[in-house]
Image (tube, rainbow, N blue to C red; front, side, top):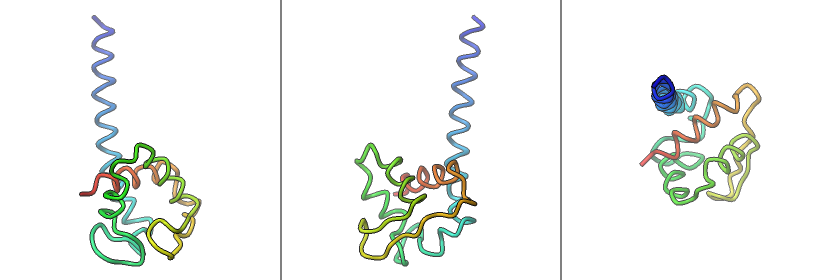
Length: 106
């Protein structure tokens, strides 16, 4: 019986942490300078988060691909303007949260 209770608590905490990460993604997006080149919706220097989400909607590898691109920079996915690498002051966990949040934009 105790095993079932521990399992249920673990599952509940996992859902809570996932929900918090999704909320944190937007906050990190805003505080880490992403908004200098990206908007949630609309034209800017880089693609909007809604455009990114639409492009990668059916890509099972999108989270990992985009985390790598955000960390290291890149170009060619949305035109010729290169995306610079993200500074070391932004953690891998924060990048993961931003990418996860961005991929949920509709």
